[in-house]
Amino acid sequence: MSSDRRITGRNAIAGLGLALIVATAAFGALLGATLPARTGLEEISVLTISVPVSPLTLGIYGAVAVGAVLLSLLLVVRILSRFDAEA
Image (cartoon, rainbow, N blue to C red; front, side, top):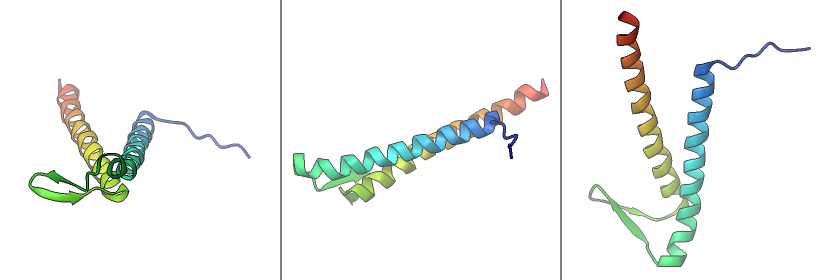
């Protein structure tokens, strides 16, 4: 049984973006696990909101931050590609 699965450009970009978000979340979790023990830092302030430093919070922060940047870049590319298709 062979499958004729092909990797398209959209699937490759989506997979790469998802892998980047997961890697950033893992790095944030690792940073959240080691940072308090090494520096004694217990809270950080993000836009006047105090966030406790833990693996969960830094992992979520990293994933959301990178996801927002990637989604905004994707939106810009999609908008610019519409202008290119019309010309």
